Length: 426
Length: 161
Image (cartoon, rainbow over all chains, first blue to last red; front, side, top):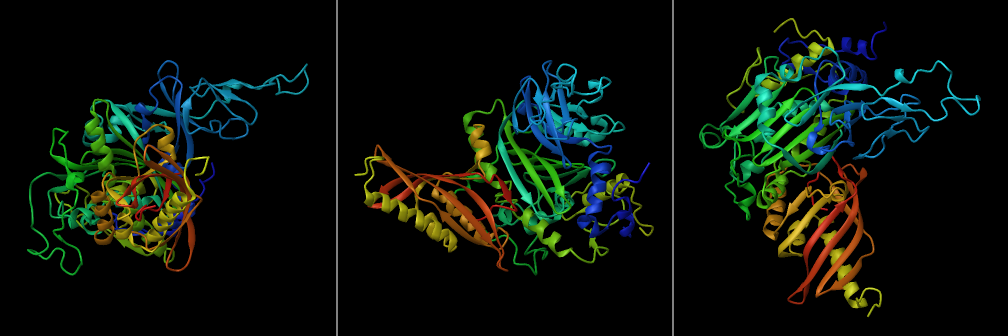
């Protein structure tokens, strides 16, 4: 067996601390690392978020997505079962399905008209036996050996996950109790898709998974809520992780502590940040209609490695991360409400969508932050970024927002899957 | 009167000038003057072709009053951090139609963004669908739907299209 592409890339970089409080820049820039990630992360023993059942409710419904950088069809077969198939013809490697979404009985490749049923089985090869015994495929060609490559699929409350790897544990075990609860919380009743948003960011995908696991930046980079006096870093909030530290929930809650920062303890001293006590002309945008049994007004769940579930007030979405190269990724967000939302609630969710996404008043800065880092770390690849807010050592739940501990959790698990030995010193 | 769409050359010129002003105010970063082109109960929406074609209502940006539009501009000025850039709107010929006292105007646009170091990229292409009304003798925007073909937003969408 030959070593996978890029395997020697790992020897170029060192993680000096076992707790991943130092991350070498090269991990974000090296194309060989990206190659290896496709095998060991996205096709490794993890569950990738694929789509929502609500997007493909009827037999024959399909939608094109990507797992890592691999094109995948997610569809529902005639018997209602869900399948995820690599969208690559077993003949010449062409994309089989070209429409982004639709309904079909079979997926037929336009190149030579090979056709596959909705379970990925090769069912049609035109002129397989040639014409009058001339041409065609050899007599021993066995169609059964040339199905579309399949991913293993599991669903939870209408959220569809897939894995390339036989060794991936069952979905619920992979998520663990905290994140099983988070998936079931957000999808506690049937959902209605409201639409999609896409964002192309010219930086490494892990700068975004870092960003998701870094509550500390929330009240420093994203100033909408603080400028308009809605939230601040000293508010009630924190982060939860699973036993491996690979998943993260960043949360904030209604009520709790108020003005304990800025003026009183100098938290924002030395910055031009802080509560400017400015009011919106139309504050209705900020209204929150409580709709979960808990008091969380913000719950962003990052699932290792390609998904984030988002509740920002009443704005609900699931984001799928699609890495394109070491230097570019796409975020595809599927916004949704619940089937039983009335018109006013749907309207409210659509207005509140202004807060999130590529034009999000609260979140637009993330695209810029990722690109700022990605540009500046072009050289000195064995220098490191610092991850020490909230302390060093074990990765545990955080009861405040001044922490980036969950970021280390991601990297510790990432190193485990990639076969990287992190640090001797910590 | 123009037999094709019931619009006089003068009216067509007036709408064309409004679109010119719309693009120029954005390009000159005069966002506060730009919001003044809208009526108080206006609708401003940027929505992707992908959503429109699937009858999905989600926008990229949605302001259903001038207050909300002003809030967004104020947030850009005071709160948001975004890529430092210059906009250049190229707005195509405007098609104007009139119905029941309301004017509808559509035009294609290209929006180029340049960075401080002088590098330019095509940021967005799409179409404007506007409803215009005359208020105190001045043409104002009642509704502006920006239908973007470039639904995959490059980096982020801060300044309006």
